[in-house]
Amino acid sequence: MSLNDLSHYIGGDLSPSGTGDMQTANGILRGKQRILRRLLTNPGDYIFQLDYGAGLPQYIGQLADIPKITALIRGQILLEDSVAKTPAPVVNVKAINGGVSGGFSVEISYTDASTGEQTSLNFNVSK
Image: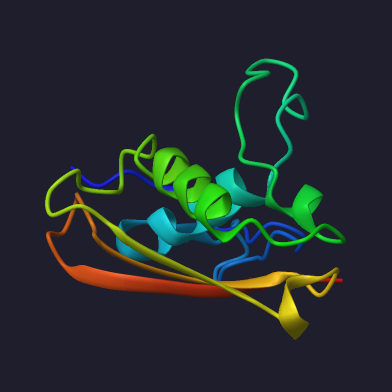
């Protein structure tokens, strides 16, 4: 059975489907949206789950501690049901603009638990 969420990228709006209902996401798209939401949400922002979120935007403006950020991402994505535990996800973080206040880029390669497909997610966390 495939689970559906409302299709929503963090920071964006919900979208209508072609039939006028709300657009939904499942499979790999659902997993990517949930991973992004978890990584970009600050802990404490969800009042019903105060420990949810990695809070990656809080690292903008600081000297990029790449090992710390990489470990944080790895630990957080493994909390998502869409990310298979084996093989272990691969996380690469690189500083933007020398790592001082410019932010960082993130590349994640993982196996989607619902489909068994290898997939990737790439995004920047910057001003």
